[in-house]
Length: 213
Image (cartoon, rainbow, N blue to C red; front, side):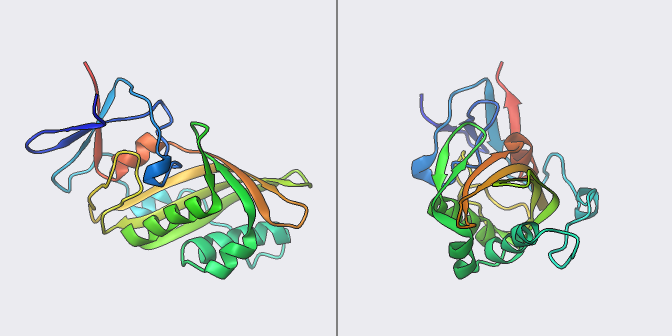
């Protein structure tokens, strides 16, 4: 069966298991299994689960200037706001270990460069793109957990989804990630595990999910 089939007014795609991975960001890394769901990209700007920025902001963002936070927590906030959202390549190279690996919800693994490609696709597609932290927890050692939000106005085609390019809606879109980070002895980030609701994000980006009969 092909990955998608075309109809006159909309495209249907097969999605991967319950965790459709926005983590498998480069086309060569994408892997998904056939399930009972199909996704339809809408031809209009009417999107399900339309969410305004004010509705999204239910948690306050942490601030890198907060003196009560640890240096590692402040660094994690800064890399999101500056390194990822604004493409500060020297900051990314200093933060991510060369042997870094990202583990998505379905167990797929990315290198740091493949993850950076996803960040670049987000910056290209979204105006006012931001990466913020709402919670950060530490075990006092090499491991840190966080709640992270990616947000932006979906203004241009998004090329890094697991169902192919998604056309813009000109509406806000966001998703919240539960991250677990592991740091190497030299202080660089060497491993990350992430869990998030990819299905909800697809809907916020104008993709209608239809249960197959």
